[in-house]
Length: 81
Image (tube, rainbow, N blue to C red; front, side, top):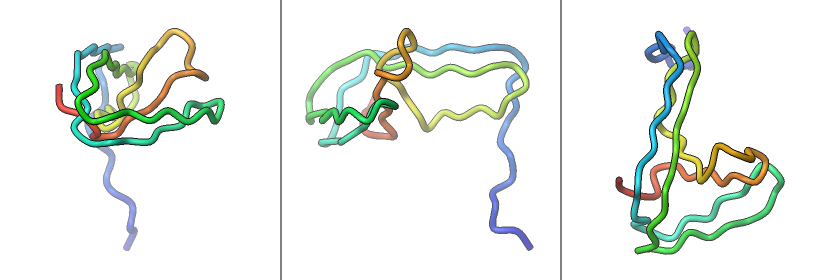
């Protein structure tokens, strides 16, 4: 028996979602470059998700940008759209 979760839905095509969000509790996030960012409760910002055809759809991770990924910060369930 495996402790791995079964794969989720697979994207049929490339996809992209952008949402204006409000942070609901303090959240510490690192960019891929290792820079720390502290999101504060009540802060409003634009977050994005995206994926490619043929890959599992992951809606847990939201990013502050898709333009320069190493400087992007990842927030997981730290806000409400």
